[in-house]
Image (cartoon, rainbow, N blue to C red; front, side, top):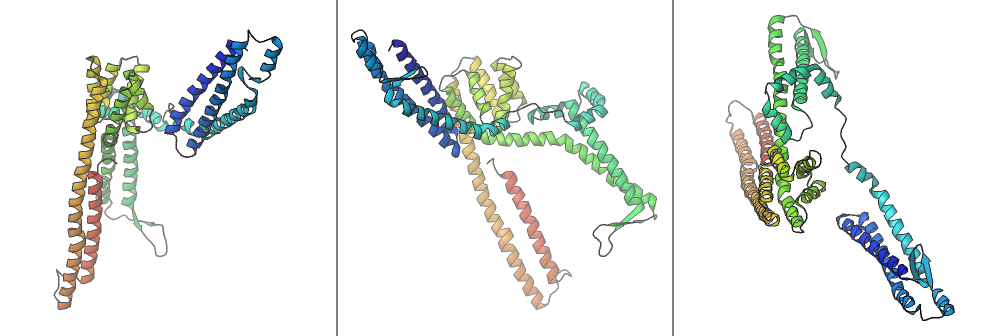
Length: 434
């Protein structure tokens, strides 16, 4: 029995403790059955630490008495020791240690099988080129590139970056021209078709029937073409407006996540880690999908392009769609460059953003209460009162604008439905992020 055995045992205990800490961190973030796997593995590792620790006093006694005991007695004492791999244990603990070792291996293997597929899905890979984008670029690539070189459509390029859309400006313009051309061709063909043919339905048939119609062809052709030209114009306008709409949607999601992300960053900063490490943790977190994409821009500019942290923060602030996040990133850049305390700055921003979040929820709550009062008055009480008045008027025999009671009732029901839909749309747009 040597000091080497004691050192080996202690190193093994240290390794087990490190593994326990890693598993415990995973245990806190796990859910459902995964927690059971982590718990079983941690308990098994703790039992292994206890078993190894039980052998330490015996090893110390053997080291102490090694020079004093006769060789025969020393061998009798060593019979009580079992060696597994490089670990020295009490012989009575050998079976127990092997059992715990098997339990921990089985639990970890089961966990690997269970989490293997989700981990594969979480890995972000570069997507293959879009075939439609490639075809569009072949047709309109040169024209789009020339427009970009001239400085046209700069506002779209800004919105593309803010919307995190994976297109170069020239590629997006090619797609816009391609779809506009396709819609134009289809609409012209439809205009010609409806000019020479009359669409109708035959009794007992589901599909429409076409019959030749040669009356007033010139006038109808001109009218149909004028109507059909509105479709490519709408398509072109939709492509112009879509990036800004997507950027606005991302801005709303960032507003929802920002208070909690800043609070998380403040907690990490309190541990004294390197500032760039804070952004790596937030970027890898699944709790902030919208902010995570913006923060990954910072990490990529540092790791791939070689920018320093301050430059990466300011570049990302220019390309984000959310003004609050841009102000946060610019403030972080200023704080780091001036040597300020990052923890204090993030604490202040966290309190401000959480206060804004609470105020927005309170404003929405007050607005919802007012809207509910209006809804009850306009869409519940008013139609009922109006229907009662109509019934009384009908009983008296007074005509109402030449409409009978059934027609007026249908108009009231239809109007109520439309107002309800409008009311729901209004609440949806006024609702703060969930």
